[in-house]
Length: 111
Length: 114
Image 1: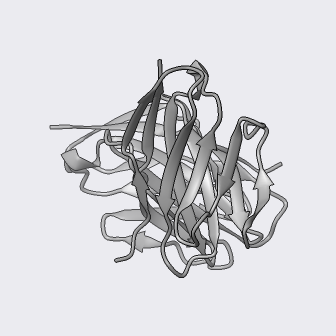
Image 2: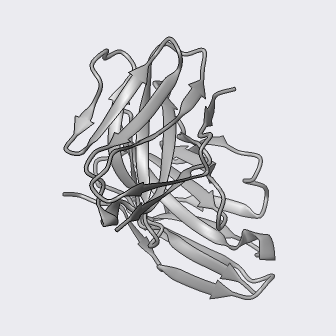
């Protein structure tokens, strides 16, 4: 069964550093998403991406965040200058029809 | 705004027993999809079951079934013959047919006791 993959599984970074989280979507899916889950809290929508542009973003998705699909396969989330409160699990998801398929997540730890 | 509410932060059940997790939602849409996701300690999101709002028949997947009450905007999950491996966080989720994002509830932590 096709699946969404994410790398790395765990990233530790220092405050102020840039991080790039990577996702490989399912090949025939056209809609891509990033979600965030701070430990012990609910899963929150960050951004959706379709046809090479952002289709919707949440209040969390400020200027520190950006997304792109640089090579037609990977879908990346960049955090320009990480803060302690960015520590969370980040999930990539892709969608076909009305079912989203979630990747295994990247645990980001900002120290 | 669309919201999903799970009013039970934690529940426990004895192995082999049945447990029901509650979920209510709010939307003005008529067509939408509802999901239950399981999140074990690995924190991966695993789809348990989905329900299309236009279908009256309740979805069933092996030991998992839902009670979908569209008028009441209620979507509960029943787990029959609970197993130790069912111990996890369970999230109720909603996506409308515009479908740009999934809205999650706060989750219910389920403990299955031996």
